[in-house]
Image 1 (cartoon, rainbow, N blue to C red):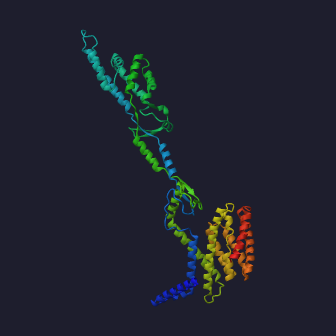
Image 2 (spheres, rainbow, N blue to C red; image 1 turned 45 degrees about the vertical axis):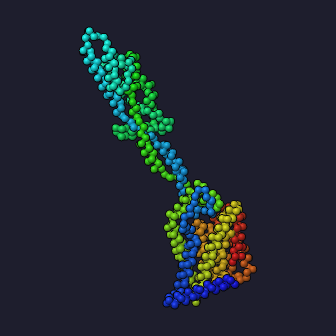
Length: 517
C-alpha cells in the first residue's frame, strides 16, 4: 500500500510539472509523433547497451599506498606495461658499474723529463769544464766544497735528491754528451708503450679495460691489455730491463746510477679523470631504458583484503595512470559501441518492417518491449559472467568458460516469441548474439552458442501458453545447448576439454532459462 501511495505521489507530481510547462506555452506535441518515439527508443536502447558493454569509465583515480589493505578486487580489463622502479634502478647501477674509467694520458711527460735531464746535465758539464780550465797545478786536489755546491745545483735543476754515489758516477763521466744521450734514450725507451699511474687498477678495471684520453690529440681509446699498465711503485723490473738494454756495454756502477736516477725522474703519465668518468656514468644512466613487465588482460592485480605490496602498488599506479591516459579512447570506444548497436538496430528494424503491418501505435509498443528485453538479456549475461567468476573462485575445478554455458542466453528470444512472435525473436537473437561477441572479447564461440539456442527455443516455444510446459522447453533448450557444445568443442579441436562439465552446465542453463521465462 505504501508503494502504491508512493507511485501515485510521483505520478501526481509529474502531472503537475507537465501542466506548469504547458502553461508556459511549451509544446510537447512532438512526443506523440511515432517517428520521434521510434528514434527515442532506438537511441536510448543503444546508449544503454553501449554503456553496459563498453569498458568501465573511471571518473577519479584512487590513492593507494604501500602497506594499505585493498578495499576490493581490482582486475586489469586490458593488457598494459608496468615499470619496475627497483629493477630499473638496479639496471642503472649495473650500467654505471660497467662504465670504463677515464684516464688522461700525458704524452709530453717523457719529453719534459728528457728535456729537463739534458738541460741539467749540460749545465753541470759546462760548470765542470769551466772548473777544469781554471784549474792549476798548485790546486790540483779535489775541492770538496765545489763538489757539494755542484751537487746541490744539479739537484735543483732536476728537482730530485741525488745520493753521493749517483753524483760521483755522473761527475766521473764528466756529464758528457754521450752520457746525456744514453740517459735520454733510457727515458724515452722506458715510456714507450707504457702507461704509468699512481693508482692501482682494480680487478674490474683490468677485466673491462679503461678509456685512455690523449691530452694532446683529445682522442679516446679503450685499452684492455693489462701488460701496458704499470703502477709507479712497480716499475723496477721494467726499468732495469731498459737500463740493461741502453747501457749494455757499460760497467755496473754506471748501470746502477742510471737505474737509481731514472727511477727518481720517472713520473706517472696516466692520471684518473674522476670528472669525465662521472660524466660518462651520468650519461649512461640517463640513456638506460626503464624495465617493464606486462600485466595480462583479466589478470587480478590485487584481491580484496590483501595488503598492497611493492609490486601490487606498481601495477595499480600503472593501471590507473594508463586508464587516465586512455580516458579519451574509452569515450571513443563508448561512441563506437553506440553507433554500432544503433546501425545494427536500424538494419534489423528495416529488414523486419518490410512485412510489418503498420497499425496504430502497436509497433512502437512492441519496439519498446523489444528494447527492454534486449537490455535485460545483456544484463543477465553480465550478471552471469560475474557469477561464473565467483563460482570459479569458490570451485577452481569449474573453469570460468565452463560456467559461461549455464548463462540464460536464450531468455530474450524466448520471451519475445511469447510476447510478440518468433520473427521478432529471430531479430533479438541476431542483435544480442552479435553484441555478445563484444562482451566475450570478440570470441565466436558464445555468439554462436547463444544464436543456436535462441533460434531453436523461440521456434519451439511459440505455441506454448501453459506455464507447466516451460520446464519441458527448458529441457529441450538444454539438449540443444549440449549439441551446440559438442559442435563448438569439435570446432576448437578440443572435443573432450571439460566436455562433461560443459554439457552439464549447458543442460542447467537450458532448464534455468525455461524457469526464468
